[in-house]
Length: 80
Length: 282
Image 1 (tube, each protein chain N blue to C red):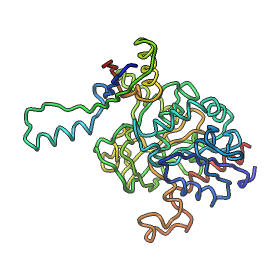
Image 2 (spheres, rainbow over the protein chains, first blue to last red):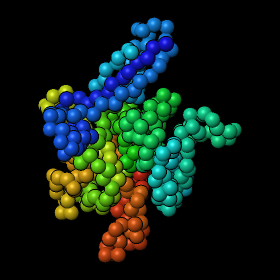
Image 3 (spheres, chains in turn orange, yellow):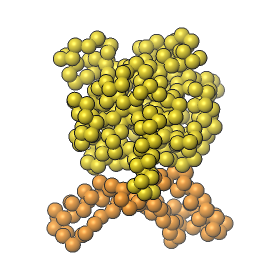
Image 4 (cartoon, each protein chain N blue to C red):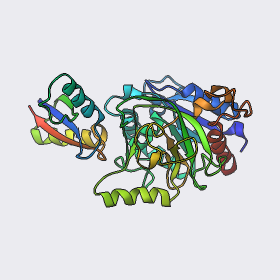
């Protein structure tokens, strides 16, 4: 069993209204030290796979088929 | 083919809405629409006699709504499930010249499926575009003005003249149509290709037809105010606003002031056009 996190973010240059609004709200609350906020989605999953490479391969396939849209997304897979 | 012989699959799953208005629009024009749940096409969890085959229909409609709660991305779950089981059927359906339409969440599903814009293919393996979060960061729900800019390729708008303005409401949080950005030059070339190939169908405009009008006329920030596109054959069509909500005159916000025929809502021409196409072709 492997526990994996898939972090899906936006490519550089893609508008991020959620991040921008969060940044603005933090500033309004007095957190002036925040210079940028980018929105990320994290999926944490437990996977039954014979080895780490097989698990990685399956998670990459999940990213291609469902979790990301390559037009705007980047993704990072982290084994916990 | 007579209009009552045109079978329309109004495809839905958990979270779909607007399917009743879509059904009513086709029904009012004399076609034979049917509500079909995705599981009925997948052949999953259905009783005997409840399964349906995509090939038995002439028009496939993806209505609006929030399929699967809009989780992951709007339309992504619907599209992934459909592609996994019905991908080949969908390609065959399109290649036979049958029509597919989607409004709002339907357009998002079609883009995630890869059947729009579908550059150099019928259905792309991976999405070639995206309907991203509105620049405003808000759900934009209000009347919008659309300019019909298609010169004749799209079979869904043959009853609308090029240059006509149509008042059709929008209701979406993720409607910013975007093409890949490998470089500014390549992105510009893709947009140019959409226009050169007569694949842009509707652009958001202001009330006098300026398609460069910014927010609030363009509710989501799409480049070139793109509101709806078609595929290379003109039979697959998606748009963010909701024509099914203005099929009748009385559902326009200014219905009493605009003296148009009682059935002549601005969305009607879209349903009528595609019925014309199917009646002629089959």
